[in-house]
Length: 451
Image 1: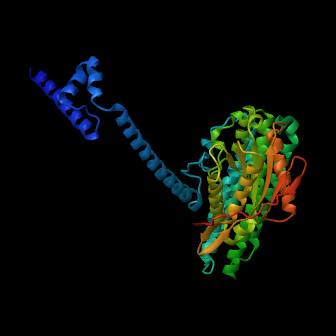
Image 2: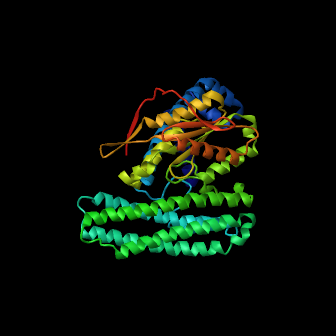
């Protein structure tokens, strides 16, 4: 009996609490009697809600939820931007990021199928990425010490750089040996595999030169000169590493195309961890899907390729960490100028590529040129100094007869033609040849951002 009474008490208490909460939130029926009827008589539910303007209530709630969702989305995007800058540009690590890359210190987390040869190429890239992170950290510390460099700082930088070089050589040698044993699987692409081997040997040679310099140069008599010399050594390594990265990414894709595996590549490989937009792999996989869906034959598409002018000088003046922050902001700026249907990707190094879907003719060309001119008005501030970008661009319209590989080659050829004429200009391929685009200056509002 006591148990029954207790259960009744709990039931009544729950009913009262539920009603109170519903009233507080504005969802309760008009009366307690109606609530009771709504609970026990399904046939009377229509009568209960008839006293409430259901459509008005739903509209009011829908509007409120939509407003809240927009506010939350704005906050989330702002927070994501802050997190991206914190984790990518400032901390300059690949850990805990929103990108598709995993921690380079844990390559075993890359869940790839070992039987495919492009996996071997990727493992060469992993060793290079890890070395790049370590070298940037050393470079940043050296730059911050300029003007008050001490012997301890120099010796620490030498030890860290030596350790990085030796670690890279060990990891690269292991990956290269495995890759070399599989070159025979490439068939018609055997020459490509041999080219990858040669590029890796050149990178290894540069690292061995650096190790020799560290062992034989005088880094004690003039500490500031020693600081500058170490930064120069890091620059040489960076240039060789970037060349190797771009070559190996292109090789990865060539092999994947040869093995007809573009649609089977791991999604985690699609994003560039620095800019948070697709990398060359993500770009080609997306274009492969577009062409399979015949988008190029049913919708106008305009493609444009942008190359930042003299970006090596920017890296040299401010350091690769600041250069990477500038690239991050430039990618974010370009993406913000496009619709959700468009595709923007990092095409290697300081180059960005854009495919405008559903845009063609003069308007698409104008949009592409506006991106280039807008970036001229984009100013990054670092230590009260202005960092400005100019870009050289190539534009072409996609035809139904095009392959996407053909479009990429046409853009590269058009950009090369523009480069021969200098910097800060746009060339367009008219279907037969590349020619300069005579575009008037546009009214562009200057945008400034602090790094």
